[in-house]
Image (tube, rainbow, N blue to C red; front, top):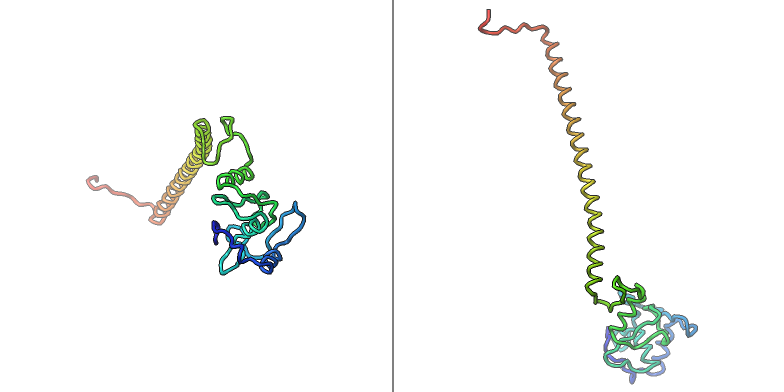
Length: 193
């Protein structure tokens, strides 16, 4: 895949352009236009041309709006990776693309300190709040684990006492059986007459 390579428009005649656009389900300008064929593992549509794989949204942007400026990426405003509608595509910096994706995924919500941070940045107040949330979460799990461990120990202890009582009862039965088998035996102690 050639993400950063410019699309060679000098080799794209009308026949190649027609073949490219025929693989897109075009509809209203406001709708997404999905690519009909192959896509990559991460969900972006791919087009085989000139013996290479090209990202379809980059080709569509280049055909309609012109070459992608250096240092910019093509952002899907609709957040649909298979969309090829040029009105849904915008050339932005990588950080702006990431910011838009995070806002779409998580929403633009203020942090505990009252401000909205850039992705990857965090202030002391927010870090302290995150640590407190984590400690609270794991403290509850730790308390639950200790409670379950005590409960299991009590069960083992009860089972152990029960097993001991059963063993003692079994030994008493065995000794009574032996006593009955031997009958009444007079025990004579040596040294006594």
